[in-house]
View 1: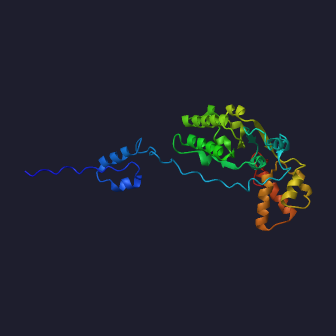
View 2 (view 1 turned 30 degrees about the vertical axis):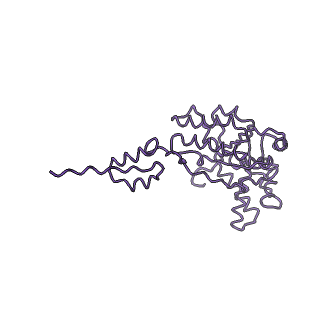
View 3 (view 1 turned 90 degrees about the vertical axis):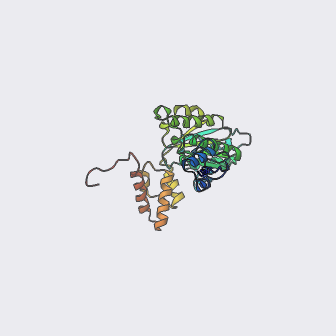
Length: 293
């Protein structure tokens, strides 16, 4: 009786071979699949040894955001005095800031301006840069952000930080708690300046209070600042109706100025109408009710 040929042995691939090449060379069905899976250290879905979990996040160009008009920040702290003290060579760099207030009030712009005053580069991170779909991935990205700022000697800005520092008492999953814990741990030990901006300070975890050296609120422009904002963006004398508008921010003026440049419009009354629309669009602004709106 002829001797049965031995089963074809499964191929064993080098550990560092790409997953695509491993798939293309598999010839042994599920047995080959198991072999390839074992070749990846820690299992099929684990990160192979020596590989990065994700590509480095590109630096964000925030030059436009750093443009700040003097006198257009309505803060509850003397920003000029603070800038003057932190610009001294002997000033401590282990400072942190929580900048809170409505959108468009100049929080991120002042953070960039502060970095320029202190002679530091800027690294900005958003929640989309840090939050990962993998368990533990967000914590790794947070640690990488602080390490990057420390290596570059940069001022680190977390934009819309309430996404990363939300109150742990309302957390429904373990990773929501570990994410906040990771942020709090790094905030405690980071030796360089960092800034967290938020429009919803009431959503921050209570433990963040002692992690910030300064908590500064940015608010709507005052009536005295409205003509300055008009002059900075449109030039000339502000119309009388401007002072009747409340809850305007530097961001509102910048947005309307871009709109007017796109339309090549310079009529002060039409500009004032657009600013009034910005006020009406804000949450909580009174709106007409019924079919006559």
